[in-house]
Length: 218
Image (cartoon, rainbow, N blue to C red; front, side):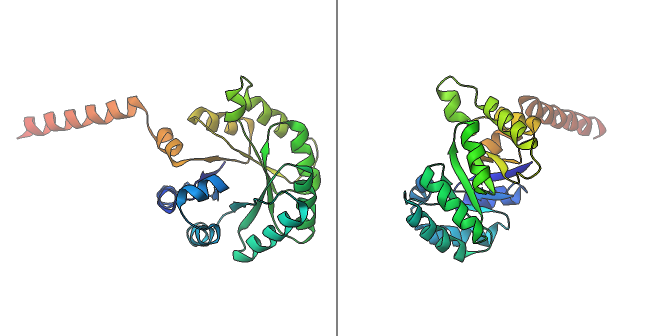
């Protein structure tokens, strides 16, 4: 499973990289704004750290504007992927950019039908949102299971599923069990994944035993 860090914060990305958990990075306009930096500056610094896909999201709503932004993003580095919301205008832009060999990721996917359209348009990746579905009493992981199942029926579909809006370590586990290509997570989820109360208790007990044995020897 690929782990993408959902952040535009260089410190978060460096931390994940040191853990070997930065196969890629996803950003969006909100994350860029929170970083307090310009999009190009942020992306250019991220690609210096991460060799894998770095997703940069457009803000234009019409096909012409999306394509223009996408071409600019792609010029920044070879591993930049243009992130495009799943709208009719966006899907048209995906097809144009695909024909120009520019990689794309379709985002804000909440249904299998949207996932099918994104694959047909030629998206390299899709980003279905599970947490936001959970928020409205739908099971977000059911969506991932259905998309992966549909995609697996057709050898010509090359679109990879990056599970987004991940809220808990269990979302990551379920994504792996289903067979999603990857997940995109904030650094706090990575930290949660590394923690377990029995691990902490075990370390404490080993240290206590060590001190006791050391005292007996002395």
